[in-house]
Length: 419
Ligand code: 3BY
Ligand code: FES
Ligand code: FE
Image 1 (cartoon, rainbow, N blue to C red):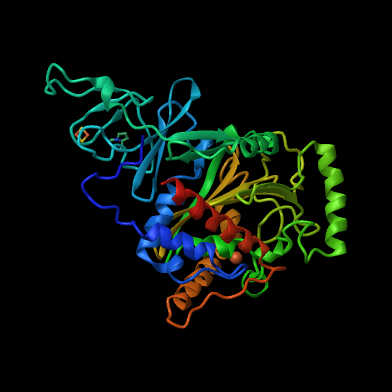
Image 2 (image 1 turned 90 degrees about the vertical axis):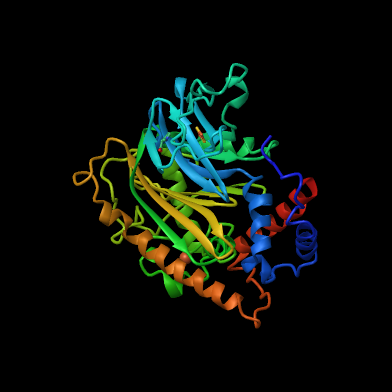
């Protein structure tokens, strides 16, 4: 339904997908990718077509569009997308593209409307995408029903809204069911965004994800984050110490009492979730390790929840603590340009200035995001050199990067076959 190639023109990626797939099939295992995967315009377009237009992409949180008529927009590659809450609380997703002459419909990042009205010639759509008004000048035979907005696949689970632009989306049922279960304690419909940051990084999107998938660089770069974050991914981390494992066992007893899930789960390499403790005595990713919000989320009664860490490839990682949650969304803008959006969420009834201070809440991850931006941009600059050649990942420190790059390679190889 959605993949439209202008029939007269040759596919600009013809030859590129085969070449990329063969380079990935023959790559040296556990080494970083060849240079064009990080800086070539054609491979960037391939990433958009084969990954961002075919996989499930994390778009927004459902609490961001709490009422009927609330909408939120984003761009996936060149595709403007709008998510809108319609009747009976149903969240719809559409290409944000008018069926008259293609204008973008909703031009702001967020808002509230009764109907979706195109700014150009005022064609008007119901919140479920049906065209209900096209003026009186379209002629007698004009069929409103044939000009509904083009839908995108939407999946809402545990407060997350995922979209997929492909006709046949991959199956993520097992993951979304677990999301519901792991996020039940947080009452995710009743949260709000306390702070948001949007950073544009001058690097390929894969360098942002690679950087996020390891803590090899943490000691050298993230003093603020290391006030609270454990450097181990989980007890399966090859570097996990006996002290850390003891702490995990102790905390898991408390979490059992609270009836909150914590078990590490993988869904292929695409999704991972686990609850792990922060440093002993620390409850939140703040400068002093104390809660940033005094009103806790959902049915949570103690801020000492560690962090429920959720990974969703290709574009999100998350930390759910007792007092606040941090969600990250990565959207590629160009071969060497990536938008990283961070949202700090709290209970919707928490009062700014009373229950939380946004400046305090954002400090650790603002610092961390900035440090990671510099690291990823320096990584990009070196990769652009004629001297760059793929280098070895450490299997003890960088297993998460290896997993990501393997997932990416596999998806490109498999998805190009289906094109
Ligand atoms: O400009 C906007 O954002 C709105 C939303 C729906 C239609 N549009 C004109
Ligand atoms: Fe939307 Fe004309 S392009 S009404
Ligand atoms: Fe980092």
